[in-house]
Length: 135
Image (cartoon, rainbow, N blue to C red; front, side):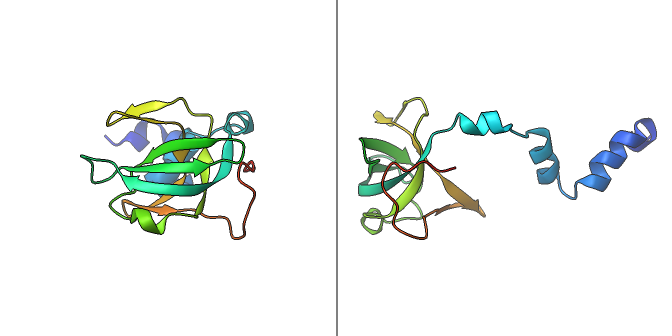
């Protein structure tokens, strides 16, 4: 027997409302505005970038957040050349617990889009003061 024979309402909600499993997953994992307000997303400028020894993906980024400088490790090394990143502004998740990777501490996370498994960096469309909160 099909699932729909047992639960017609759930089947209708699931398969008539959501055209993909990604849409259903998004619905089931909805965040509240309170969840979003907990995030400190700020604009920072990449001061320098370099490859992390022993990793093809990780880059060590030195980020200027206005009131402070941060070291953030990002898995964008297969797509981006470190020398091309200097001076780029990017959004940073600034209130994330530090994490050790490859023996280095990462103090935040850059925000990027995943396009077919590859990262695409996000940038403001005009120069923004470092440390500006994203809302």
